[in-house]
Image (cartoon, rainbow, N blue to C red; front, side, top):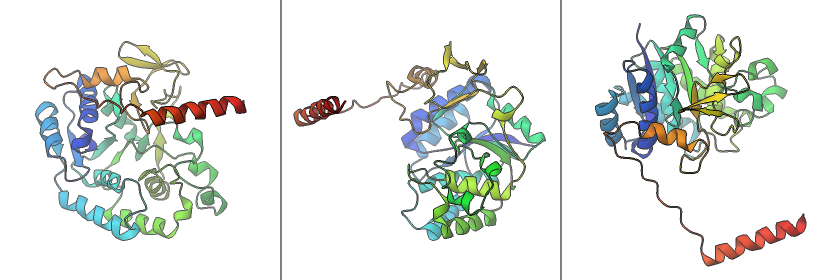
Length: 308
């Protein structure tokens, strides 16, 4: 049985991918990793990740194009903020019998592939506390009022940046059938904050894979992992979640721009710069506000203070 990791990337996220790969390879030199091209601009990152980390490009690019075309035919061009995110669904048909999918805005703090051991007793794993925030950014209340899903089922919603499963558990036709079902009922979903594939993929998993497990529900619970959580404690170049007194398994900057000054910037910067063979990242300076922008901001501040 082959086990491996999939990522989705293009040249634009090279620095993010390097940070992720540095963190993975720090704990695991052997696990094979396959990159799914986000678009046609992937050749530079493919060369860098192949040379330094042994990452291979997904072989069946024809399938990825077919998937993208079918998505466009079903939903049109304006339904999703980032339709190419759906290319990650190529994971179901790649070389690995069991796999993890990991977004590039993540760094890991352990041999992350070991989480596939949970698949001995389940068919799908995720590892996040997305459900504690309710169904926002995934579903609208319609899925409950029209009994599309039960209250219990929607507690299994997950963040699409980290998950694992088994090859061919979802078929290509399952994907297309899901697209068709969802296109008929846009009222089921919450796209108010420009989430992309996450609502549709959650719908598919709840409908088609009953045997699911969220690792945070293991005995003794599990640490959080969102970069927007402020209470994590530093322990060297890792983080501790004091609410469960456990080291984080990974940190995910979902919805957060990774740049100097962002939450846990020093963690990301450390892992990005672990490989001395690669130059450090370059972040463009933010444009300074013009004279008029400064005055407008000062007036807004003054008005807010007067209201209080």
